[in-house]
Amino acid sequence: MPGKDSVSGNLESALGEGAARYNSALDMTVKALMNINVLKEDIKYNKQPFHGNLEEQVPCELQNLFSAVVSGEIKTEGVYSFILRDLLASLEEAKSMSSGAAEVLVTILESWHRWTNLERESLVTRLFTLEENERMHCRKCRRMPNYPEQSSYGIVMAADSIRDLKCTFRNMKFVDILKVMRMEYKMLCDIKSGGCGTTNFVHHVISRCPSIFIIVLEWEKSETEKEIFETTKALEWEIDISRLYKGLEPGPA
Image (cartoon, rainbow, N blue to C red; front, side, top):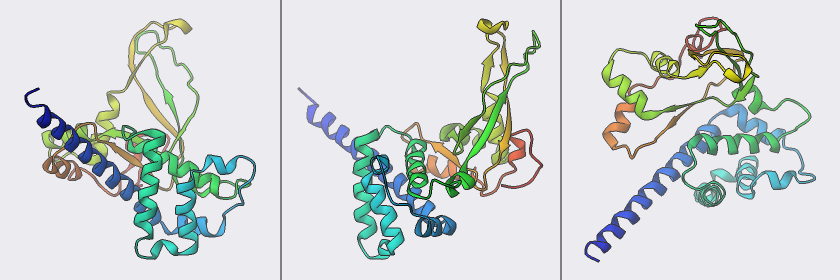
């Protein structure tokens, strides 16, 4: 078939680029976590012996990563690259490269939580866990349904939406970009529970604010180097999350 080799070559190239991006994202995620000193200390001094089926809950490759951090072997030339390669293969097999960065991050943090002493609150929980309620006041029938509290390790936002807003409104701050994006999230006043079916804005009320607020960028397109650069220009190290959640005093996070 004419062009078959060309199509095959383009597909292989695309798959190769996808794998490279996935590898790079995993590398940055792991290094970012390893650069948090309190986490490194926690994993060194609060490791618990595996028992029951707990060992099955923490992938072998992550056990190797944690053990290398504890022993200091992670600093030996070539060890980190070897562990990262095995970890990449493990996550690809378990979740496929279609998994988002958020899923990979959750896998690592959950495993970190299980690795350390379960008899007390995990440092991962204290540092990263965000607990919030979604509240809606129907503008038509005035119902105010109660929704259960949700726990997460942060929020996931579309990188292309951040980029588009920043390019359109050059002076808009990152936190305001996030606020505009979250305003697009609406809920129906549930007819099944006696509501009227009207679409309403949702208010986010935080009950537990983490020390480290994680924002995961979801790259849904094959962004060019220029587009990635345009996206990063919108980012900031500190934001006032009281602009995103009710129940907080103003201040940077």
